[in-house]
Amino acid sequence: QVQLVESGGGLVQPGGSLRLSCAASGSIFSVNAMGWSRQAPGKQRELVAHLTSGSSTNYADSVKGRFTISRDNVQNTVYLQMNSLKPEDTAVYYCNLVGRYGDARRFNYWGQGIQVTVSS
Image (cartoon, rainbow, N blue to C red; front, top):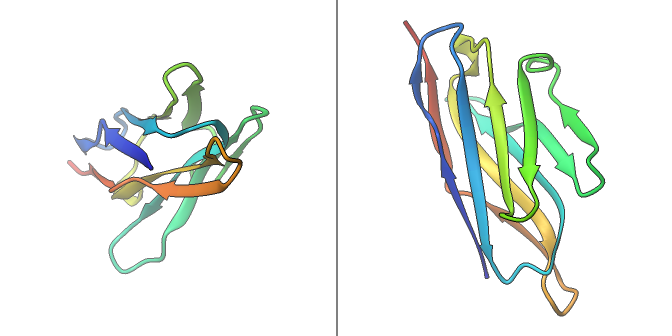
């Protein structure tokens, strides 16, 4: 099993910044990719940022230039630095981890979600 623990969400004013963290632990042999998605009320979940083991990144157009995804390989932690936040960034943010167990089976885990609210 793999556990994902998200932190860093909360309430911030428009134009402000937040840094989300997602710490992974458990039976992780290798990590293929980590990422963040979000879901706003009444909307579908959307990919926000994605980081592969080869350090390739992919961002939603709506966050390019404002959000940065990074990873601590030793700690198996992925971060999402969010700057210049807008009210439309308000959502529940979910961490995602794709990797392999020691027996080579693949896994795909999601965090429990963390609320980010951008409001004055």
